[in-house]
Amino acid sequence: MKSIDVIAAVLVVVGAVNWGLVGLFNFDLVATLLGDMTMPARLVYVLVGLAGLFQVTQWKAIQRRWKGSLAPQPA
Image 1 (tube, rainbow, N blue to C red):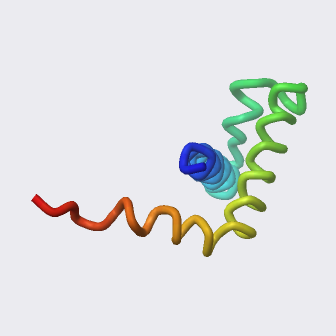
Image 2 (image 1 turned 90 degrees about the horizontal axis):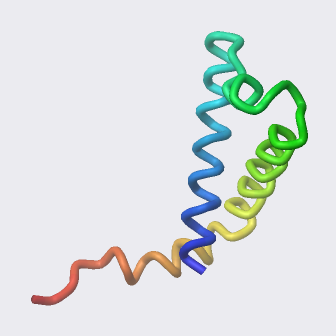
């Protein structure tokens, strides 16, 4: 399940960076790389949106899953 957490986090970051570029420079990186509203670009937009929804709905569960793995390990 942690791999899904990581994939979702990466997609959320991709979306955040893309929106930051749109807001600051009116530059859509996804559209530039994949074409303006082509199927691959639309797929990225949909995946970013789904990743954001996943992060919101799973926030507490993600924290519980990762809490144990971030604790220092005894020597």
